[in-house]
Image 1 (cartoon, one colour):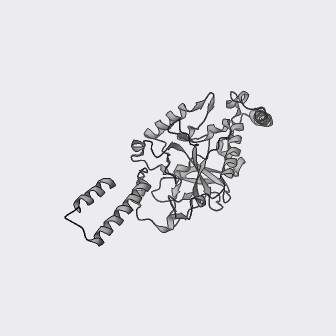
Image 2: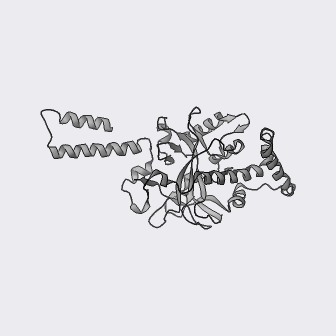
Image 3: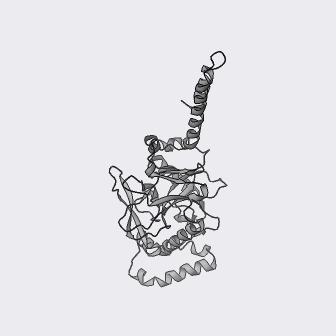
Length: 318
């Protein structure tokens, strides 16, 4: 039963001639207001986890007083960190990027070519670094998917090498972005990977089924000549961007406290064009005027090698 239908039913039931007592009328009004607020919060988010966890556990909630406090680190720091990793990934895969080099600015082209010359010894050894090794060399740690330590939780994400300092972006939440007015009903059915941003924007991080088909289609559509503006390899077992596994980070529990939190990040216009191929997000509609939304997971404390990442699926903004 929809909220609008329920409201109409109550008003019809207690219209003139059958006045409800004032206390009951106040109670009904309060109930309708509460249901309307809940519906406005979740009407676009078809996440089974919410339906099964309406009784919130205070120990697994994250609370912030204002929207601005939902950001743990500045957006500029996130942009610098992502660009640093993406540049190392680009240099590591320079042979595949030869078509793009002539189209870059002189300074960017020189920087990449100098990096290529400095790695001649590696190419002679015919050694191509794994993206996780590149991440370890660039950020000082790497992450990967493994079986979760939580019972019946399935896949989780672990720090496999190195140490993550507090405040460092650890992972990214990949997927197709839907504005609040865009259709996501069929993609959301039985889909536990739909992430709801604070402004109602949705990110479908499912790497299977119709979600996978939609993402591939949107990613193939959004190209600028030879430049790919998004990454599709996160749909595979071996993503080019090793950070693009954030959809598999499990919710914290009473025994396992959260060590990362979600932070929304709008990609700035000045983000290097050649590095956008590592962004694991794409807009559902190509003509949207809003910047590309990304969600990163930021470390709440120092995280050591071997630890599993846990987040808060519920963040309440007062």
